[in-house]
Image (cartoon, rainbow, N blue to C red):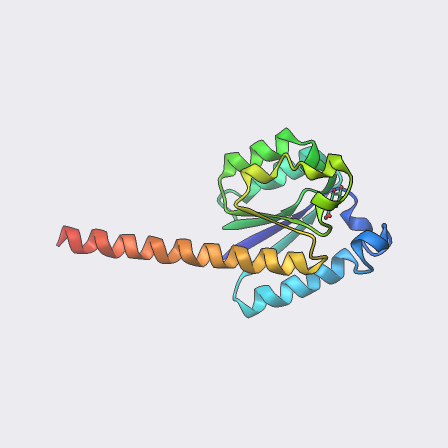
Length: 161
Ligand code: DQA
């Protein structure tokens, strides 16, 4: 099993950026914690951060055939990017959108996520812990999909006998 974690613009500034909103944790620290959880679950994990919309679209497309699911914080692009939304919809992989802050209790323009409707689910407002929640939710979904696939294979086998 492999998960790709995609981080959008300015998330490389975590720990320095508006710490009253995003807290003091650096992106590398969040990733170190996620790596430990991935290891416990026997899951491969890859991290990617970019400030560029097109690079994020490329990374989502690359996940097809390479990964089983995506955890993404499109950051400011959540509110503007049809291209990222379309890429998530195009690959069709289970995808969890994470926001450190609660986007619904901030400025009005943040209350609309353009990308969220293409995702399986969204986690918002739990601080950096949201990445942990996003990851275990994704692992749960992938586990259920795997169990469903196995059950269908079993059923097909019994029917062909
Ligand atoms: C964010 C919320 C966005 O509105 C903002 O542009 C970000 C971070 C969050 O994680 O809370 O850059 O996605």
